[in-house]
Image 1 (cartoon, helix red, strand yellow):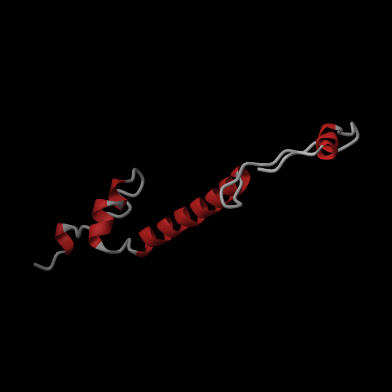
Image 2 (cartoon, helix red, strand yellow; image 1 turned 180 degrees about the vertical axis):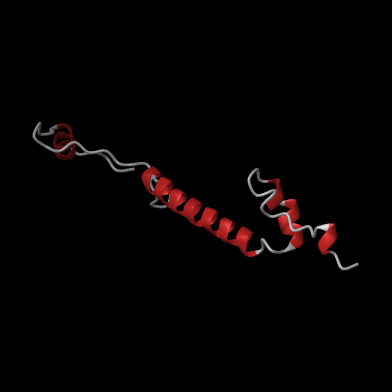
Length: 90
């Protein structure tokens, strides 16, 4: 499209040995790989904490307690809410 002039070609080929070395980081919409890892780990931490909160918030719902929480190894006997036969009034 544009023809390269001799002056521009000489300026591009002459590089000082004292000049800084630089490389352009690959990115997608301005988000580099390091930023994506940082944002992903932050989002994962918030997601795990929100999931644990929701699980224990709905832990008193019998369906959640029976189907989800009692399948975990240490919660099965702790969350057992059966009434012993001697305490049953019927």
